[in-house]
Length: 382
Ligand SMILES: Cc1ncc(C[n+]2csc(CCOP(=O)(O)OP(=O)(O)O)c2C)c(N)n1
Image (cartoon, rainbow, N blue to C red):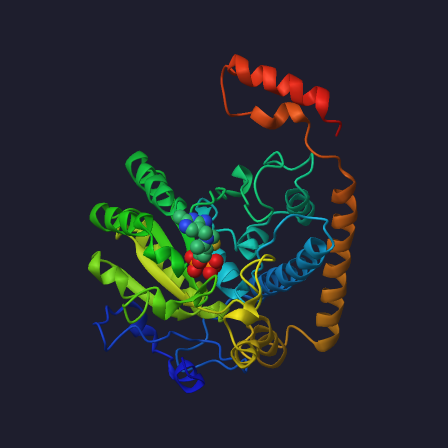
């Protein structure tokens, strides 16, 4: 993808809902340019208060992300998956939803949890997998789930959660609950059977669900061109009989507008939408790989110039005049200090009690596991 191609694709508003034809359509829908200017699509005129909340979420996500990588390097938390560069896709997706809606995020979606209102301390308890972690210290730090925030935790097999989001939406439709579900997944996940099963089912039964593909262009080291012979991800929706929209995933406004449109449609009984957020992960796949083995420094540098934070900041400072260099610096300092305090607090909390290991798994725990647990308790001192 060349820079020219990336910057040119701004569609008029009406094109957002126009079903495009293969080869001619699925251009990249962009509202906010990397320079912080509004394209010919027009300003979605998001209220200032909501914009500042979203900006805070995006910056907070980046602050947490950078600190988590440092903590992992110091051996203080487990393997960590970075979301740097993808914050607008995540925060914009949550912004497009309503309070009743449920989120089925993938492992890279810290920004979704932040925008959904999960407190920093709760997030840190998860990252440290400590005794206050509501997921009882199970799983990798990145697997995020809290019933209270309507976030369903992710299971390690790629895309396994996508049919769950579809099924949840279908159940809601049958029960006449007024809600929409949204699942996120990477470009690599679109090669999985689960993705296609979910898309087909949702299309046939018009499930009120939104599929958000965070196309960060790599599945670990596999580039997206090796992942699919389709010209893009959004186009796959056509085969299943519903709309696919391709947006600039580093543009909060484009993502928000597309998801809000998809949610409104789903609520009216008009079925699912696939939103492809074309984005880039600025970091490695996880703290367990080295991106220099499969990407050039020039490519990463090009995408740093398209940073989702910078363009939103420029817009807020120049266009809306609701942020200044000073208030931005103050915000960043405040967020750094919030995260540092939460880290200090969570790191002090001891690990979960061994008795919690089988909690929520069995109604009646089998005898052999009871025995093993007792043996373990004799051997391990936490
Ligand atoms: C079924 C399955 N196959 C392989 C893996 C190993 N794996 C973990 S992450 C990953 C890459 C997924 O890439 P993508 O869906 O593009 O998401 P991204 O990590 O780029 O955000 C793979 C292959 C897995 N977890 N599950």
